[in-house]
Length: 153
Image (tube, rainbow, N blue to C red; front, side):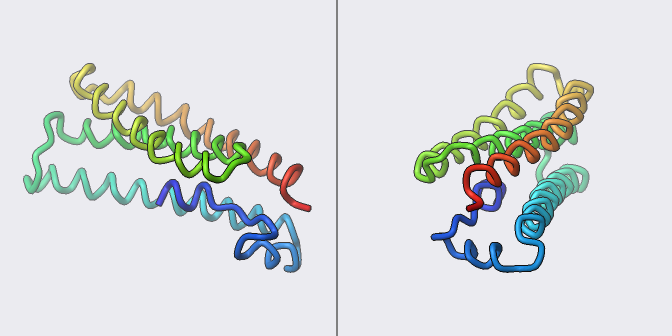
């Protein structure tokens, strides 16, 4: 879901492309939709993290470092949101689509590996999450500005 909604664009020839160019507000309506999509992606990620934490808390699936595992993976998946936003700058949709699963997988893998390296100490993961939130805001603005300049015609 992170990849699909993050990489979806609405060029004129794609479904929805003509729609967003014809509604009141034009690009501002498109920007609001992309920002809402970003909120949904982050909310879905948080929901999955909560589910993972609950499975550990209730002993359904015991994680090696408990909730620390969930926090690390979630923090690094927040980085994947940033990377998927920046991948929106890649002009070729086939390249974007091909690279995106690897980017999300690699980001999550870093979370899995680093939770073991740092013995589940969540301080580093929380720092990564904080930086990721700032980078998400920046990458969203860059992606939208690029889209307006190069694709909104």
